[in-house]
Image 1 (spheres, rainbow, N blue to C red):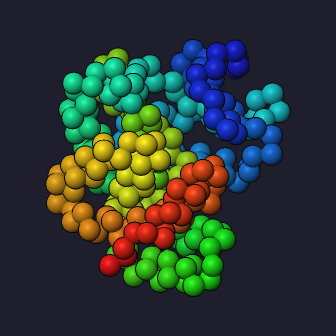
Image 2: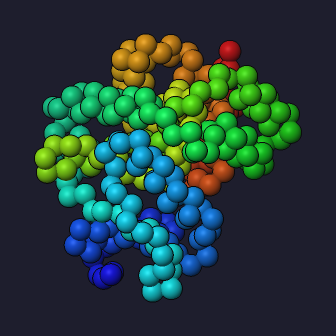
Length: 249
């Protein structure tokens, strides 16, 4: 495999293209368990029949762990939204429909969302009283078994040359409550400084799925706290702000 065409750079990984392959190469020291879990998530979601790139192999490339999938030729939904602002609402509708399609799937062997969130809340460094409150509220939320992407945003959607949308990056996938996944997507809009379209997204999702907005909002402090653990320092401060100010009731 050739590593001479970089298509994406992240804090701890680089993605290369080699013909029909996308090769995600992780930095040395990246958790082997997390890499294998990501590949396992991908394989389990692939079995649902959703349009996602096929997993080809997991192995070592130039002494570093790598996950190899098929390369999907196309344009991200984020790019389409930016280049065609007059079609933004149409693209947002597609985005919400795709997320609802994900939530309609079952993958019983995926890790459970609540378990992951409990673990993350314990790692936040928040004071014991706040952690107890968050754990208690999380436990009280309804337990579902829907596939949740965990990082569903327009940069992770690629529209291929035939117009078929493919969903990328299943490293955070779990099974659980769809409204937690929606709260995460809403926070991603806010983290990007786009609260206006975040609100538009949340309203549209709740309307199309017949979900009470207050129900999604109840997840916001829990999701914000659990997502604050590995974020950049400025993201952590922003997310913990939601833990402090959002009215739980």
